[in-house]
Image (cartoon, rainbow, N blue to C red; front, side):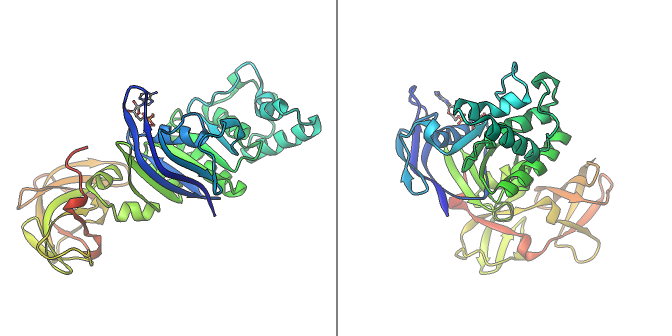
Length: 350
Ligand code: ATP
């Protein structure tokens, strides 16, 4: 069921800056969504419009089919977890989580039970009497989530909620957030500029740049079938080469012709071709391309190798085996690992 719809939403700030240009988004209930894009792309503005803290300049916002564009934030079944958690430092964990229900004058017994349940959901049972200052970053993050889920919102908005955590804790919280979302069945809309985080957590990702949605889809779709240059570069490492469609199932790049999957592009058209570094295999037999190793980095679980082919293009290759600088290597890739993009869909710069 569609729970939230942004229908031709535009946002022009008072200084004339247009932060969002004709945004159309459909959000289904019970799924985990990410808004992913570089700094300034408009992620927070979208979140604030959904929450009701910012008014769009044009367009409509719907909640379960009802127009809520002008509705007060407090009347929406939507809660937000902010980047800095916005916890009350002078209140303990219990009081922080109970705050919203106390404001609504709910009976004490109900509040006690709901706080207990919420703390259990975020794995903080036993922490009710702790002061906020006595908690780690990850624990504070979980208090903020407990506080946001206690009055059972239909939608939870999370604005760069993991950015204050160190890498290890961040990974742990990614698993936890996903588990909490699955357990509660609430729709999560998660803002991040971290590609890996969005790929790891989401059912669906909206990739934003410069106030427009570049692509939406499942993590696998977005990773495997980027629709343009921006998405291909922003999501993961890529080798992007200029090329030309020779005929159906055949494309030319790096001075050679290769069999490829059906790209639905007219023969003769100029294209850009994306090959992911992990789809390239170093091989001694039947290579598709040969190249000379320029540099190599060891990254713990794989090597990152840079090598230049005969056309002068510098390739990035991920390999579990190391090579030698100056060594000549052969590269193999499958036809379906060649992602062909129409040039009309690419951006010149970003
Ligand atoms: P970040 O990851 O850095 O938080 P973001 O993608 O969330 O970035 P937004 O905060 O939505 O981006 O901002 C989008 C653009 O709108 C930015 O260029 C920002 O400077 C601009 N902007 C945001 N708020 C205002 C405002 N009140 N007045 C004018 N411009 C604003």
